[in-house]
Structures are given as C-alpha cells and as structure tokens.
Length: 158
Image 1 (cartoon, rainbow, N blue to C red):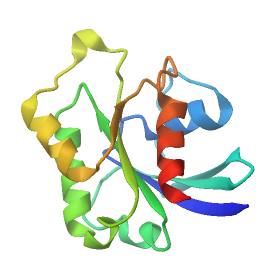
Image 2: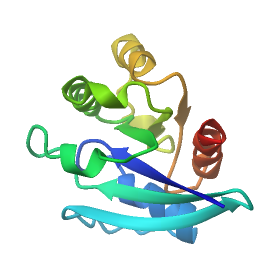
Image 3: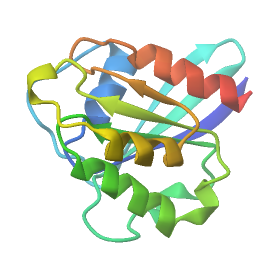
C-alpha cells in the first residue's frame, strides 16, 4: 500500500479541519477550533493508497508553511466561498512555494451550503483556475462532495 502525504493549505477559518473531520470521521462540529501548527490524520482510500493528511494552521505569517510542505505528494488548497480574501491567500502560498506547482492538487471551495453569504465572482474563479487543474465546491457541514474531492486527488497520486 502506498502512503501519500497530502497538505491542506488555506487561510484560517476556511474549514480545513472541518473538511478533514468530515472525510476521516464523518463528523462536523459547529464549534470553531483553531489548529496550532499541524494536525495529522490518516485515511485508507482503497487497497492501494493511504492518505496522510496534514491540516496546516491558517496563514498567519508568510512562509510558515515551508517546513510542513517538505516531502508532500499532493496539495489541497481550501478557499471559503463566503470570503474572497481566502483566494488571495492561496495564491500567495503558491507563489511563495514554487516547488508545489508541479504537485498533484485540487482546490476545495468550501461552505457551499452558505448560499446566502456567498461572495464569489469571476476574479475568484480565475484565480482558482491558476492554482489547480481541479476544483470542487464542498460543504464540510453537509458532507457534499468532500469524499469525492479527496478521491479525485488520490487518483492523481497513483
């Protein structure tokens, strides 16, 4: 079985931890828990691949991601559909870490269920398209397309 390190990156509060909890434990909590440093979870996708998911704390200072990204096999960029600034943060992460550009990646546009609060337009869509070849609208709260997104990334890792 192949073990693949996946790093989840994005601004604080976009739902990285909630997405991991939904995927690994099929659980969602309304309470906000700040990740300090990194939280690591594992999930066996199938008989061929195990994901080691690094949920990295939100973007507080430039380049704090660098040590965590070493040895990663894939990236999950996480944006918040209710916060356009979250996309700018993702672009900054990618630009300051050019070695991750060639890695398999996917962008989760989270909080799909918050339709009324959505602040998403052409500018955000264009930026997302430059980050990753694949993007998927997800909801950690309802679970919609969370597993599908992780599976799409794991297929790129084989």
